[in-house]
Image (tube, rainbow, N blue to C red; front, top):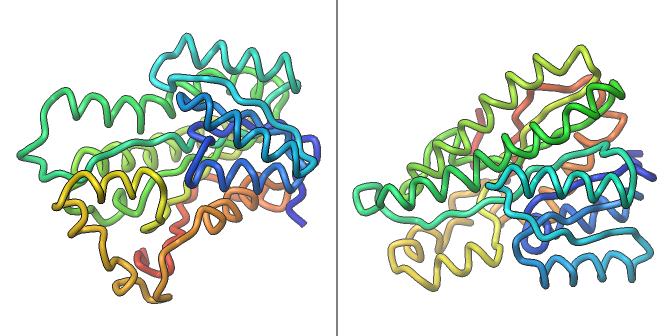
Length: 254
């Protein structure tokens, strides 16, 4: 079940955290994984881990906010592994700060990484998917997009935009047998989350003790998110498109 044997997948932000969990899990299911990430050395280490497990992976340094770099990455992946079957838009960035204390430069960075990066990669991969009448696009949003999140106003908005964009893409691409779905993680310990907690007392206050609000009484893991991605990427999910799935231990029930 849920095998991805010989499927070619791109995972943006796949070097660490949730992205690493997705990359490794997809490779274990047989996918050939391209890790598109600015963190080149960490991406290479994750690719090496996958290779040691018997999988196939490459690391491609990519700034998701730069469309030309994105196009070059897609071309390199096609040259290395063949046509792209699966796109996982996972790259993201944020800092937890009251909106009134943020600046336009901060807004631009959050929107560029979290939303424009998704648009860039979808724009770059869908021509080939449309020509082949086959493809899976899975974007990682956030439960912040569904219910809001204190200190993450612009991030919540950008992640909400991913949901709306994905629904429209699901409608436009359905005739080409391309499914487009969204996964919204709940609180999940990642290097980025730890950096936020260490750098700001406001963020530490918000993030600490989150598990007590989660009905299943634990934080998520990268693998929790990865299993949902594998399902959406599989043949078994071929009749599911335009959907948003929260993977949050019941924190969000909508």
